[in-house]
Length: 498
Picture 1 (cartoon, helix red, strand yellow):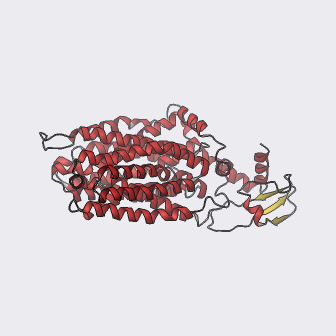
Picture 2: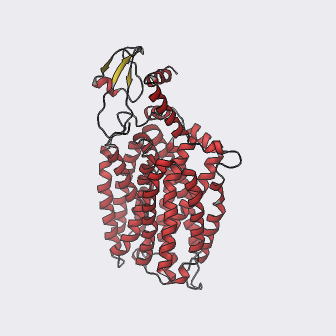
């Protein structure tokens, strides 16, 4: 287990463990870590070594690429909102609807995401996302070239439909392809590549766009990049030849994804207090990140900051967060301190939103950069930890269900927060005109209100409800296999008989 290899010896063992032989290719194709009937009765069995495969990085890399591109598409015009408004002969509030509609499209597509991930696995989800990206980007470019904002919005909506299929997929993909020693890091890499795409948009768009006519070429370049990134999606493998860990429930879910119905998983989640204690703050903080990133230029511009300043601040927010997550995710994989990390990161996020209220009026760019860096470090470190923590404590529910719900909640609230914060923008009579001071106060108040929820995890006699069930299951299975080499055969026999 844990060795990178693209081939392994699979043998049959008779019922008394007296003899063995290699399986032929047809028999190997019918196995995936479970014992199969070979002659009509369970007289022989396959024993599969749990292992990970180098090819898993191809699919992971593709998830990373698509998440980068789809997020770049989302925020591409936000850092240059005033210039885009001039090009399309409209207002910044209308340009904001490109981000808002994109987030709402995520929610609309979420039920289809449940179906794709739970019934057909991550490859189907990735391919669907790639198709939406290809179509949506070129429709968006057609609208930008003809200076037709309605067509641009239609293309943006189609791209929005692509996002949930890759943003909700990392937990399912890492569960299918990675061992416990690498799951959190894999989930972090795929999940946090999404905000990395936003960082690229924040940083590059202001440099590409110096005048309104540059908007058209900016959209063209993003469309070309999206097309190149989408094409390899059709060639990733569907699932590994053998499972990555001794987890019988995971194996069954991988081979028979409909065994656990979505309806049943949703009922389990709805009754779980721990799920709600995590879901609510996760959705709120993801929502505020989406709103904050979309409106950052409009938050800073009234106080004398340039579009370049705002773009760099957005990039600092995200890049520092990615570096932090790159450090903390492998440590979480090794030491499993999910709960303590959540308890430390959540208060820091809330406090940073509170402190940022006072940043724009200072007109101090270092102040803005420092607060953005600390906010990014806490926010991005939290994302993969929360997603993997939910998979652990809610095991054996499908990882795709909890992940999709969390992201859907965050995108929905993000759209709502953008509308509210835009409405709270000061008018021409404000000091300075167009400032978003009231919007920042709203953001900080809500962030502080939800902060205590995850701090209650494991308290009030509910410590047993935050056990890492998936990890405990895998550790138990591994211990039994070491103690008794024939335990896998008996487990497989019992599973098939059931």
